Length: 279
Image (tube, rainbow, N blue to C red; front, side, top):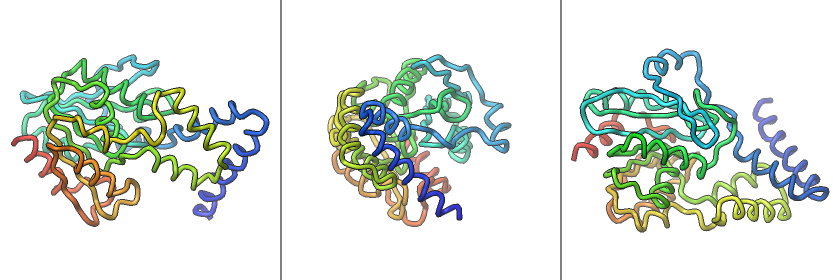
């Protein structure tokens, strides 16, 4: 029954957007975009609360949001962790243990609409705005991002090129915005009228078209040292995306796994991250 509802509800929204667009295309488009950016999961669960509470740092006011930051102090280089869609800082718990063993100074934060941060919407340009302010505040040496977090790191590096950063790690990260949009459309089944209006809305808001947004293109000018992980059987983010990013990123290494899934919390992955950081 639940699986059926998961299919029916998005289709109902799609029909609603199709009909609404004939009465007010502009308002319908805003609703379609808001629905795309709405965060439905990722808040802190009871079993995550104690772990995160012990590391809570200040809340920062960024982009009209209150952003919860976390700090695990260490004597070594500063590392900034950037979680993915509908997740929060707790997702880093396994890697954090290994980073602490190596005395790294670790910073993380919850994205808008996630964890203990305010808001209910998230998109990459907003995430990048928050990320850049935190980079400027803490001047990390290394960045590690999972899924949308990795995508955001590479986009932000393209538009800002932070001088403090030496190494970047991405884990199961998508690259092409058009693939995300195609998936969104296939789930809701909204029509071409809505799609064309949505694409124009995105261009007006962010200054790029849907096909133009591609971290595989953005990394062509990236001079940092990179490490990319992606599982061949990843059902969330396409494996080919990281492969293409690697092919365009001269100073990157690509590690392929099979059967590790999208989250990739495995010790093998975390050990390889530590080895890369200590090279």
